Length: 155
Figure 1 (spheres, one colour):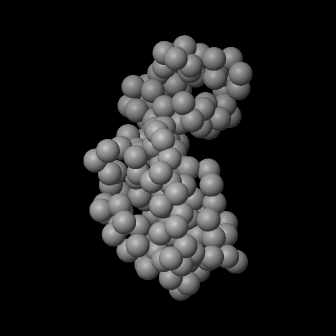
Figure 2: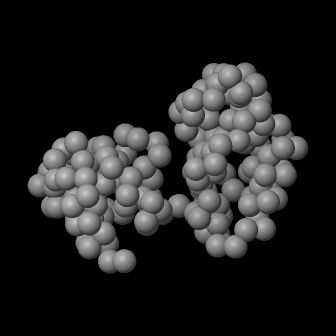
Figure 3: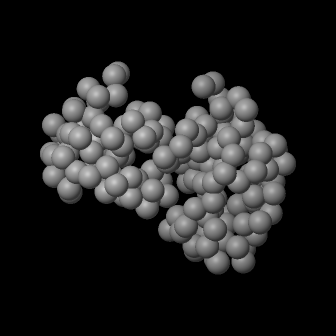
């Protein structure tokens, strides 16, 4: 669907006020997998907001990507709880399996790896989210199994 038409539909659904900005940004991310500069400018125009306000909101929230990402976005919690429970081993396992660094996307566009602030699963740390699926009580072995399943998925 054309980007402009999608933004108009989202604005029709959520409204054209400052309060509708976040759900519209989320809707574009669901459709496009990230917020391009063009999409942020279109949203600003549609809501009659300064582009800087749209950009500032988009870059504030860790689940609103503003650069092209892989089909599967792996977010690993970087809080102290996850760090104390082995987050670094989880990151090393992912980096080794996918041959990428934090902040990168695999050359085939399948996976992106990012560290993020609290995912809300401190009681079951370490935790990660792949797109919208939450994984907790992680170990390197568990991560290898999870990623193995994702590597089999069609894109």
